[in-house]
Image 1: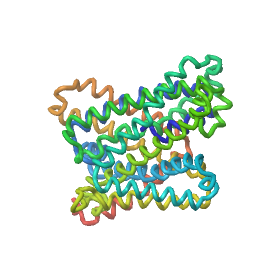
Image 2: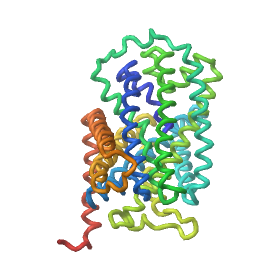
Image 3: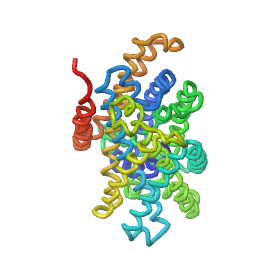
Image 4: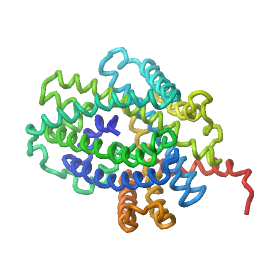
Amino acid sequence: MVGTSIWTLPASLAKIAGPLALAAWAVTAVGYFFIARTYARLGTRWPTTGGAYVYVREAFGDFAGFQTVWSYWLSATIGNAAIVTAVVGYATGFSTGLRESPLQQFALAQLLLWGFCALNTIGLQHSARLQIALMFLTVVPLVLGSLIALPQVRLAYLTPFAPNGWGALAPACALVVWAFSGVESATVPADEVQDSARTLGRGTMLGYWVATVVFLLTALMVIGTVPTAELAESPRPIALSMGRILGPWAAVLIGVVALGSNLATLNGWVLMAGRIPVTAARDGLFFPALGRLHPRYATPHIAMFVGTLLPSALLFLYFSASLVNVFRFVALLAILTTLLPHLYACAAELLLVRRFPERYQTESVRRVTIEASIAFVFILWTMYGVGGDTAMWGFLAIVAGTPLFVWLQRGTPTR
């Protein structure tokens, strides 16, 4: 979660909403609290690899389950092209040759994608060790830097608070969704998690709280120490803020931290792209080969390969567009395709809590209903905030999977 978004979003948010971006971070954090709670409960009660797909199919049947896994898988694979692009973008700051050569950028991006694919194919243990190291490399400097910066925050930079009006709040929250994407990720590789019935719920909420603290502290630091107009034009907003507070050395250090942070995000989402379709493939609702496990490593090696092949192909855009344009295109599409599975998952819990009350003995049905309903309404609002063009492309991408569902069901007897 604490990856590409936190390093790039402050500039985009400053342009759209100004200091109102602080409210966008806070509102989205509240909305995602209820989404995280929903996934924590569902993951604890249905601890099977696949995440949202498992819960939605249980509640609404095969077609809704297919739409969920199709949309979620698209989000992960498309999003990985955006994430690796952000990694390469930060790496260009350390090499003039890399910055001026699309071929070198393309080669580095391919190396990173397929390297992480190999790492996650030989097992989660190696990937987890790298993830923990990169997480601390990211979180500790951001939290410490933000706490040091708090006395430097100037209220003058927070006025006018809403220069583009309060109507900018919805599109700003839609952008912040990119940061919180991944709050559900602990539920996806459930079959490979020890004591999954307990770990999935705890991991989901712990991930939410750590990320939220980092996001809110960092947003306050950046918005409160850099004028809005300058922030909106900065390609490296956090480095700009830290450089002003602590000096040029801090800006260089933050560049290294950002690179590690982006690598952690890429590692996590390459894993996700390979695990999302596994259960659906075994159920006959996705390509059957994607459900096969490696005979030695017991990981879904074919799903890992295909999930990496798609973003790898998207990287050919490097030769026809700038890194910034590539990132914006694929990131916006990934935002909408990740919201539909969340919407379905929240709706699924509203039904499952009544269908399986025995699984919710420790929870109040009324409280679960209220929390899942708030999450559902919040997701609808952020889907509105992504804008008409993105909604259109996302809708087309989701509907495009329908012929695949029909083809996969060709052998199923009619009733």
